Length: 149
Image (cartoon, one colour):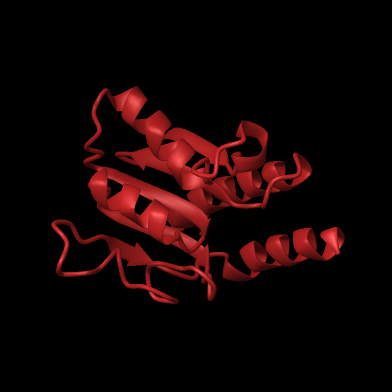
């Protein structure tokens, strides 16, 4: 758990940087054998790319760093429950573990709306730890959207 807290703290920093850049404040960090190999915040607006969620950008970089699209021995830390698109990328990359902060009642694909990450119908199931720094993650999102109104 201490490592989870450390890596989630890094993901929160990425989310904060995204907010400062005018992006929805979601951050992700991907570790390989407990070492950070990729990190990012949301970049959809900056990149004009609807797929540039923090998780996708981080997964792409991790695959490049490892030289493999199969991301064995990794863990993904993200501040918000992954959406269906990101859950699909997690499954395709065979990421064994995901740790996330806040649930996403409008699009979460672990337990809130869908159960993609743990579906036994798929060829890969993910070990998921939810709720790590959930309050901090939610607070970042709420502050961001409140400032936009």
